[in-house]
Image (cartoon, rainbow, N blue to C red; front, side, top):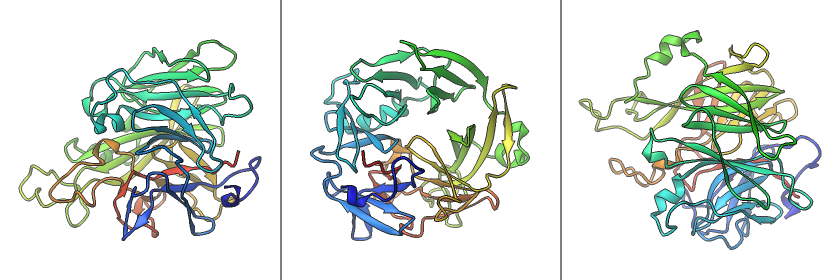
Length: 374
């Protein structure tokens, strides 16, 4: 499979978009082992028939350093490199009977990331997950980690309802939806140590505060991300209209005329930067020469000078609303779920879809992946 890979693993790598097979103007998983990988650099779609090997009905819950974290049909977790074909069995993480319904398998683990790419004898990496059934919110979404050869261990943070996690310099940054970012140090310790507990950015400090505050919960929802970019830790808020009218405006489906509406779409983003020395968040108005990649993957920041195929000062995003991937609403079952993908211009504050895929439903949802041949 090295023939699909361009570049040196030691230098900066571009980002590909992983998709299920494309058939009949829709993107569905007709063949469980086949995946497509779109290269923006080459404007080319690669199809790898054996990418998921013998994993039937696998569900991806994370992408880091060129490796995927997947659950097989029995909810056994695995690490898989779809380019090299390497795979690693992880300990079972499932507190209930694995014959439970399919929706629970797809929502119990909200996100999984790796500290680094596995190498050598595989003892150099840590896997961290956010877990807890999304449909049971506001019940807690908690953290757990696993080192190779070990078992899953809970991270007893001060907060609950974690929204996103990233690794940077062997430190885990965890965003808690109810008010903070925690930093856990994994360096040279048998058990990680929590070193920082920082309050969540205040919407009141935004210049466009009035626009954010008008987002009523019935019409809008917000998803949050952490991103490492040029050594800085960024907090990114993604605002979605839960239901849209024919003009693309967010509407209340319970209001008069709200029955004629369409599935959720991303409307805008806002960004803060972490000032660690001052322990505060600072508003970010632009990201010159950078592009961010958000979704179910560990968030990525790339140089648009190194990779000019991407637009600078932009956010490339994929649909990670897994709890609604199979939701049926007003006859839109064939086009609902996995569809909320696009590019957001930070300067112009506008969203445009990927030209290559339009507004198709994508099931299973797409993932950003940095191809790794090792």
